[in-house]
Image (cartoon, rainbow, N blue to C red; front, side):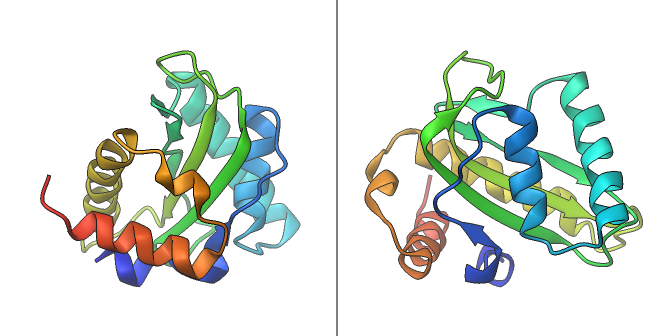
Length: 152
């Protein structure tokens, strides 16, 4: 499933963000939305973060939302070598982001399934740090897909 959602053109391997808001903006920029739709999505993501940080710990965050500004499920992968203060549950900087956005009426339950798959992948990634050494998007994508296929 993730091999269809994680695409090289939806990856940012060298994020420049230093703050949570900058990170959300940088991830949303990858979607190439018109400015008005980008702002709507950012407001939605900020409201979600206000409920509780999607920084799940171990250097990983999974910001997610449903929004009318997209017409299909989208996944953006971002990596920050320096790390971003994202108010993660463990208080540590976030280095790896999985942004998940889906339309409100996703009849296939793809949004929830994707969120579950990414959460499982995040648990595997938390036990490793070799992913910080991969610099090319194609290699990183392949690494994530292979890791997702491994048994827990």
